[in-house]
Length: 295
Image 1 (cartoon, helix red, strand yellow):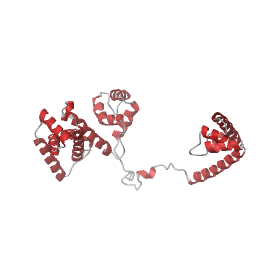
Image 2 (cartoon, rainbow, N blue to C red):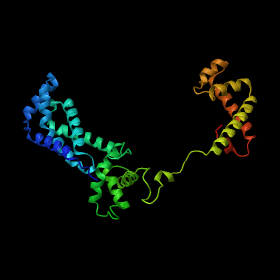
Image 3 (tube, one colour):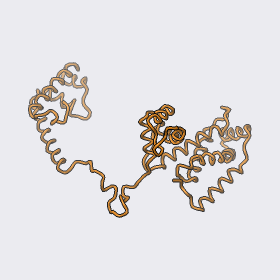
Image 4 (cartoon, helix red, strand yellow):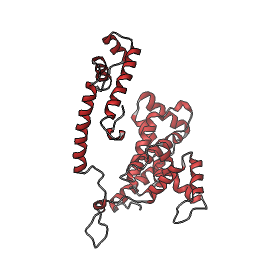
């Protein structure tokens, strides 16, 4: 649904648009002179004249994005930011017209704004998702096999995926995302009922009983591990404690220097100790999955 500005905002937007259209167009040479004066001499008057001359480009670009349901004035302001970024980075010595260079910055600024504000759910974070968001509707309209209220067939999705160089599942995900609007979880399910949508969300957290069982099992496994460690030799316990029971485990070389052996010997002792631990722990359970750890 398109955004409708209040009358005062509409008048302000119209005033800005009319002022933009009254700005004189720049010749190629004068444009480059202004860009050099700003870039080399820092003359703000030159920057202002250059930017004002191309605000019409901002307005034109904003009109192409007005169907995304966002305020026209906000689109124009974001485009102005992109225009200023273009002016700050423009290099006249490359012999490219400023309008050509600025068009990319203006469009990019507006697209980023739309992606941030079109939905409270983040719509596009990758280049592929961004391309899909801004091209899916256009390509879908061109495909003749669109049916079922605009839903694409698998062949249609494959065609779009090939053209945009993305995966088919990405096309499916974006198609589903664009087909549904945001809805509050606090919204009532029906006019006659008092239940909200959030009342039917399943709680995935562990139940109090599961929490207590987990704490008890964790205590039991800790006891088993302590008993298994007690069956190791002092040197094996040292290796396991410093290699496996610390966040910043010691290296084989460090332990080798401490124990007076080679790091290969430390590796062999560690492997043997781990096998002993596994054997000892397995004697205490019926199923290996009961340990919930890898040894």
